[in-house]
Image 1 (cartoon, helix red, strand yellow):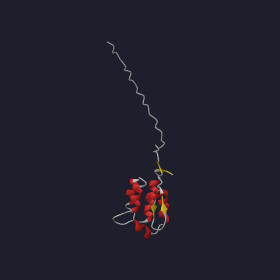
Image 2 (cartoon, helix red, strand yellow; image 1 turned 180 degrees about the vertical axis):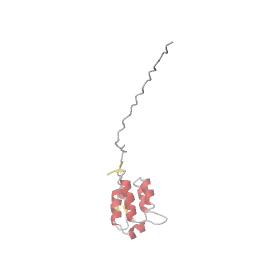
Image 3 (cartoon, rainbow, N blue to C red; image 1 turned 30 degrees about the horizontal axis):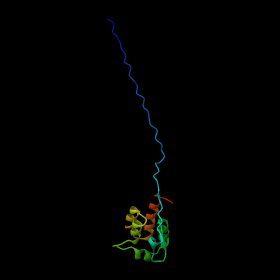
Image 4 (cartoon, helix red, strand yellow; image 1 turned 45 degrees about the horizontal axis):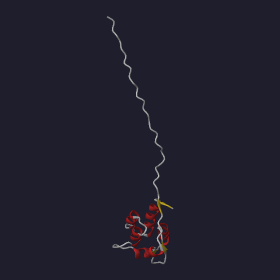
Length: 117
């Protein structure tokens, strides 16, 4: 008796790759908040600040003595102002750990990347 050979057809599965755009998903940047005259930050050296960009620039020229005047172990005027007036709790929390004007400036620069400036 001859043997019957049967062949099974196997269905080949097509693999479809979804193409995902490599562009980074851009998050919406925050608008820069400007304080009014009554809530501006009055620095001990005479500077008057009304937003994070002005704070960054002030840290560029601020003396260690002026910085120390506004910061100590029990308070940080810059962090308090950033949190309460400029509504940026993350930046304010980071400013709490800054020991020098240069370190504070670096923190503000990092946080300014999240703003539409």
